[in-house]
Length: 72
Image (cartoon, rainbow, N blue to C red; front, side):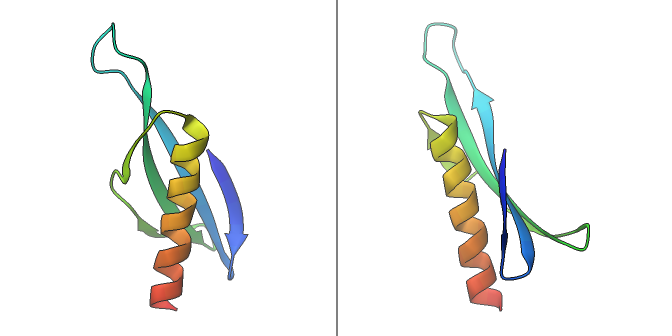
């Protein structure tokens, strides 16, 4: 999980490990969460699947920034 402060909100990018079959490589589902004053403001569903956890976390952060920009 990666986090940062963006325009007064705490934003989080999540990478959730996925492995559908034993012989397939691991993939990571991306999601994002926005909080402010210890309250959840918005959370995404699954944003996509990625080969690396860092890519999934980055996608979650990008989603959160875009949500804030479009609602602020």
